[in-house]
Amino acid sequence: MEKLNFNTKTIVFLALFAIVSLIGLNVNFSKLVGAENQFFTLFQFFGPIAGGFLGATVGVASVLLAQLVNYLFVGKELNLLNLLRLTPMLFGAYYFAKNKDRLLNDRLSIAIPIVAMAAFMLHPIGREVWYFSLYWTIPIIAKLLPDHLILRSLGATMTTHAVGGAFWVWTIPMTAAQWQALIPVVAYERALFALGIAASYVAFNTVLNKIAEINPGIFGGMVNVEQKYVLAKF
Image (cartoon, rainbow, N blue to C red; front, side, top):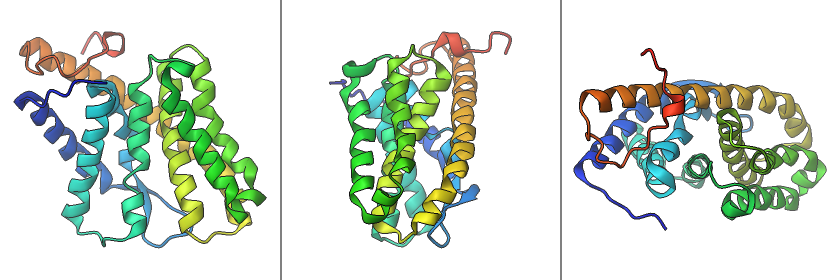
């Protein structure tokens, strides 16, 4: 279990991440099918990377904090749908944080999409379009392959999609035809999200590394910068 070390520098980093996330959460990218005034936002393009910098526990906490701040800031209605929408990205951040753990060394990342698939197919409509949930085998397959930033990013965004999809089928009335129509849309959107996550991770690594060079020790050892994803000439 990770040791939590919420020192001042960690809190500052979490606050900065929350500010950036607040901006991303309020820039709409695409409309969610089946519900009014619900959108994917730019947050989908970088949300999971917090796990890569802060580890699973603190990374998930930072994503939750960012979403709660946004929830309070925009004054969203307190209802089941809005509360459930806070959770998928938490699992995506967890998956991204556990990139070095392969297959059964990371049982939770394997279990999450399996449980999501089961939940989806237990629903009457989900049973009709059971093949839609095959998307959620991607995080499992990625764990079978050598660690790569694109695979890590794709696994994270598809884990987010798995949790969200399992909730969605049980809370939002949709027809089998609507789920079928979403299949190519999911491929397009999640490919973009994965590329965005990978690109933002490289960007954040590069910026944080530069800050650390200028002010060594600024992050107090709490922020993990992966040197192989730092742009050397920045």
